[in-house]
Image (tube, rainbow, N blue to C red; front, side):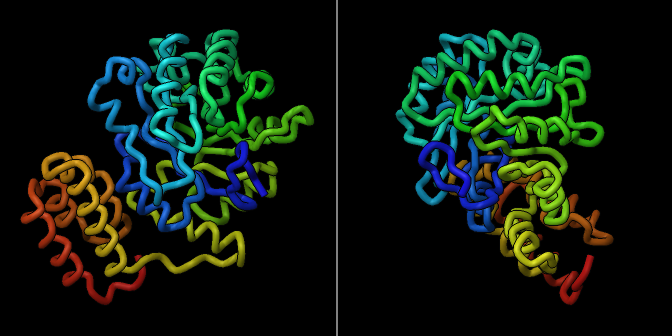
Length: 330
């Protein structure tokens, strides 16, 4: 049984990665229903929380149906991170996660996210202060290092464990790589197999299905895997991986009617949570992906991502279902 503090997650938990503009409550609900064992909010700016910025505060919204769930924060000032940890605690998540992995310029070049990988002593000090500031279990999401010459993740994991984190999720790329090339899991395996490491180690990067998850489990011994981009528009991936791990067989992919049903539900949840304008606009990246791989779909994709109202959008789903009725494989 894998545990983070007192939180039991099963024998090989599947985690939904915290993704900006993706891992919102509507999407998280669908992932939970389709087998995700632990999820995280979109990352939240510590400075935004302290200033009571609307966008940051809204990201604190969590619901009982999502549990267990972690709220993830990022920032470059230790005092701000401590204050935001106390604010997060009031939202009553199951754990607090620190983002030390975001590679985008506006975050990393300010010394937050993956930027702190250039200053490991500060990373350790910040983590220790956050652990002291909250009664929540604290976890970390990070990368192998800043670049190929600074892959110090084995040392980093040990030092972060020593100051009190309860689990670590490691993306198998450096900050310099961004999301390019293949994820390198060898160092993730070294962290997991370090005899001094006693906390759960979760691997992240290029998990696209059950065979890949099983390979990483068997080869590197990780306690679970975190899934990010492969889940966008495809929440089914969690149950598909679980089925493969249990049986060694691939589940048949969802058919048109299932994709339509879930895409519609996603839109409805988003409209309810975000309102009509944002509910449509911010969900486009998902419902475009619900139909990934269907041949000759371009015309419908264009219609989907240009519809501005529910009245325009919902009939398009019906047109898709009628047009592709009977299509069984793609």
